Length: 376
Image: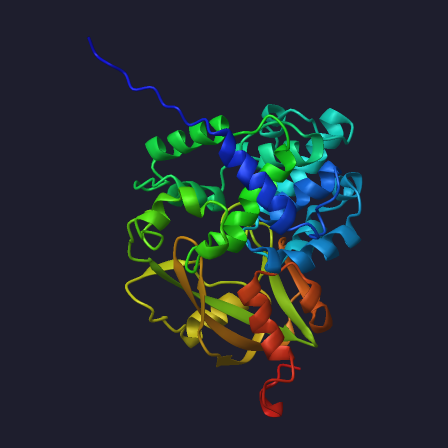
C-alpha cells in the first residue's frame, strides 16, 4: 500500500509571534494604513506591485489629489490616468486600474466587494492582492503571497527549491493558508509585508532583530544568502530603436502608442522601425534618406542631429534608443495622421510619457544643455 505524506503546515505560534512583533515594531504611518476604505487600500496595493514604498509615496498622493474617489477615477479619461501614472512603470497596471474602477462602479455601485474571490475577478487584481484588500478593508481571513512572503517562508522554513516553480509555489500557498490566524488578520498580513520589506530583506537581512530567528532554518544553517533559491539566469536580450524628436515652433511631435504592449497607451516619440532585436548594444544609425522619408509625413526636413544613445532596461530585454533631434523647415497639416499630437515644450513634464522618453525630452528643453544645443 502506498503511503501518502500529509502536510502539516499549521503553527499558531508563527502568527502569534508575527502579530506581536508587528504591533510594536511594524509600520503604522503609511498613508494607506489606519483606514478601511477599500479604494485607498486597493490603489496602494496596485501601486506597490513590483514597486518599492519609497517610489510609490509621491505618486500615491498626487493620484489621490487628481482622483479623490473611485467614481472620479472611473469617470476620468484613460489618458489622464496614464499621465498621472507616467514614470511609475508597468503601465498595464494603470490601464487595469481604470478598467477596474469602471467595473466596480458598473457592477457593484462603486463599492468593492468584500469577498476575495470576487475581488480577484476584477482587472489587475490577482489572488494575493485580493486577499490583502479583503484583509485590510473587511478583516477577511485570506492568504497573501508576494515576493516578500516567499522570501520569509523560504528562509524561515528552509524551502530550498525555486519559489517560481509551480510545485513550490503551490506548496507555499498551502502553507500560507494553514498559517492564517483566527484573529488579528490585519496585523498578521501587514506583519508579513513589513518583515519582508524591513527585516528579511534580499541582500542584508537584519536577523538579530527578527522575531523568527529562533525558528529560522536559513539562519540556523547559515543560508540566508542562498535562500530563496534564485531563478536561473538567462542572457538579457538586446534591442534597439531610432526615435525622432521632431521640433517645430516650440512643440514636439508625439505619437500615441497602441493600447497593449510596451508603454501601451502612452505618448512617445515616433520610431523608425519599433524595437528591433540586436546582437549587442550597438545601435544602428539612420541615414539621411530614411530620416527624410519618415519626417516627410509631418513636414519638410531642415536639419537633424544624432543625440547620445539612451539605454533602458525592461523586465525582459534591454532597449538602446538612438534619438535624433529633427528640425522642420515647414510643418505639414496632419488631418489624416490620427494618433499624433504636437505637444508644447512647457507641457512635457505633465505628459503621459514613458520615463526614458520624458527624461530625454526634458534634458533637451532644460538648462542642463549648452545654450547652442538647446532645442528651443
